[in-house]
Length: 634
Image (cartoon, rainbow, N blue to C red; front, side, top):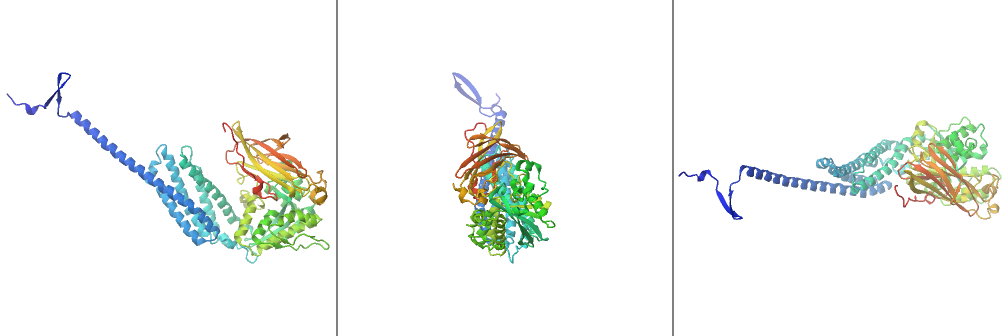
């Protein structure tokens, strides 16, 4: 019998349910194939898990690098600012180099090949891409803006801005200008790069620091834009390429006008090679009625009266300073034919007091006509007493308006002489002037088109429309209706109140509170020139005011209330912005609250408020915005 054991697979027997089953003990080819596939899958899955785990760990490591380095950057930025303000260029250089190291490390982590690859994944990818943009932007800002600025800062030493021999040294500013302009352009591009990131798919851990970085860049680009404009404009406007002459308007806040106060005292400011002197002086009252009247934008004449082109005192009844300035220049040239006026500068007594804060006290000895006297007015003016002297005491001691204006002009001349003397520090002077510009107390217009094109887009230009006005910009302005100097006694607050949306649009109310703090016996205790003596029909001691509110473009000035009661509202449109005007009159001791409603506000950005500068500190006038509550569907 043939042996067949080598040709057959072994057989195992087992009993299941009383039956004998036979099972092969050798895997079939199919089973071997399946086991091989399962083994490969297992090894592949394990390898994938290892790779993914490693990639996740690597991404986590990179994320931690970005986080730590950007946090270190945020801690160093205030240090750099402090060092620059202290003119400590050597320390600032060390700090900016340290900043560069941190931002370079963050950028390296954020542009890692694996990080960039993962940025294409769904869900987590946009977050990684956003973090990469933030780290790259931070590195660009440090290397393309901060480093060049620190390198140029030696030229921008505050002490270089202090006049020497009566003149500001313009060469350092000219030398630094290219670096400042380049830095401004770099920050502008960086801001728009972050602003272009779609935040809808982002986690809060990414969107919040992104918004913080964007806000910081927005603030920085504004500051650098001003610095770049100044670096380009100041040398030329200070007469480095030839002499310039500017009409100086000294706005008197005791008789309020939309841009500040009545421009009673006037002078010509001569600038040549950085040296500034006050020359010709005049007064608005001495100019009288202008005939023929200067042509003014008919829209603004309809809103603010035809007096704008007929009286120097009324050119700034409009809050649009380019209009007021060009009209003032035309009036001056009509009264002073043959002169050249290259621009108009406006300043008020509060701004002059800020300058005295930097220069220290001044001594005033006005050259008045024979027999005229300043009475008991102090000859030593300080930061503390200048405003009450100019806006109140002068009227009690000097009766003639022309002599009052002469005193104003003499004070302004003495302040400018103090600045030109070089006895003050440049940093203090720049800080004072910056506050004046921020509070709309210092305004500038140029008769040269190329320069005005730049000025119009800046805050110092005082335009009512254009890039300098926020998209969701509101304005509350005041025009005196008393025909006197009673606004010295008016205290004001202005507040924006956000209301619930209606019809898909935002709604706001401009709330204005006015209090007449004049003494109860104002009719007897105040000079007639201050009270107005009822010449324009306003009872003695009362204060009449036109409250003018501007809303954002395309919105509507809908209705108004005084002390909660509906009143008529004069509604207009200026530069596509709605304008609402309400007239109020206050007795001594009386307070009234004016509310003007704006509807159909299409702008979604942060609302911002601009107000007429008065004798009060602006931060005491503008109250924090009141947000809407309890709304549905906003």
